[in-house]
Image (cartoon, rainbow over all chains, first blue to last red; front, side, top):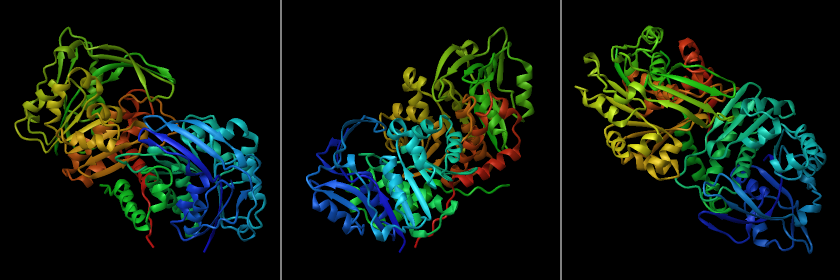
Length: 308
Length: 308
């Protein structure tokens, strides 16, 4: 079974949407990525850090999904990273209410020996120096390195971010971040510019408007599934990235054509993530639901034009 | 050859975008619809009205494209409808600077005898009473009636609009208009509600984010082609509708599967329209360019996932 190494936050989230609000619940980029990638036949491990306030049941949940948690450091007397946010009525934008870095402030990631030769590495949203620190520990060159990041690091740590971007094969960012990183409004031009920064593949996530995969002059588009109701967008981007990386790791095929399937799986899994608060839907999702929704994606996008 | 009847404005436009501005140039919904539908093997006619200030060369242009212009009334001493608008920097929104109805104010559409049994009728954006007046003149029930409209009529003539919407098979509107007409934010719910108003098919245009085609519980998505540069969005929605209706009229097949092809052709033609100011690109577009871009749409959307 191929190894997938996931780096990112494991955290508490408190979320408010027009549909309700939660207390502190399970959250974090690596959590969503791990849950999403667990739908594929891969040997996944999370590298992260939590405080000893982090409930054992949450760690058990990840383990029960087949995710190796040896690399999740538990800091004695430390407090787990906490994020709180409130979504606007259209669910397309949100305000961050609280960010408490806590144990994340001094996080020094240690990759477990067994995963230093992972086939696929997914660097979830974290300080770029932490992302780079993980790559430094790999003893074999991974077949594919995927990086997810956000505008915060472009504002605060651009040189470090640029330096880790240079080392990855795939970058996944949203449309506004692609524009900020490239200085180009057109997403086609933005992707071209980001290619020159290192990544051979650029995935631009557009939320409810789907995702674009760019490689050289080629482009592929995965729509978001039109849903009756989006309940909570938290973690959708991480779930997308986890589905993409999990599928690629399982299939051992890093061709552009296979990456198309990866972004379809990413969109597929993200479409479930937003149906309930937090990780709830992903925790209880069954593989047959994912397969069945794949048929919906086919019906949504496939056409047969006869040229005459 | 199947007959396609087009109703809509034939007009002067003056356009300003971040890339430049034009004097009064050829514009109007029926103009864009006609140019777009001329890429298909159909017998198309426009019903509209202009003043005698309207250059003969513009009418000649439409005729040269094989469009019957017998139904374009020329009002002696009258002035042609004039619209002027300025696009914002992102090209996603615009301000209307000038609207001079002129001869459109008293427009009483007359359908030429030969087109009273048209196979497909496309009611372009106009006062809903004018749209209804055209349907009243049909001597045979058309195989398909398509209606395009905009928020302006929802604000000013909602009862008349609702009454003509009841009589059509397909409605094409943009996402904000679908929300306004239905009172639903979710486009899935909006389409469901609009179905109950009459149209069996609901097309929701999302500009650079593509278009959705709804029919009962089925949904299909046609992306917009990612472009390096959008030069002028004027007429893109009409060009989309013209491509859709032209293709359906040519193929004589009003199945949902064939309508998928229709929205792909609509997106295809619209992607050319925005590449130059006004109608310029559509005037000089060659059929082989359209076919070649169809391959790009296939590459953009088609995938092959093997389930294992």
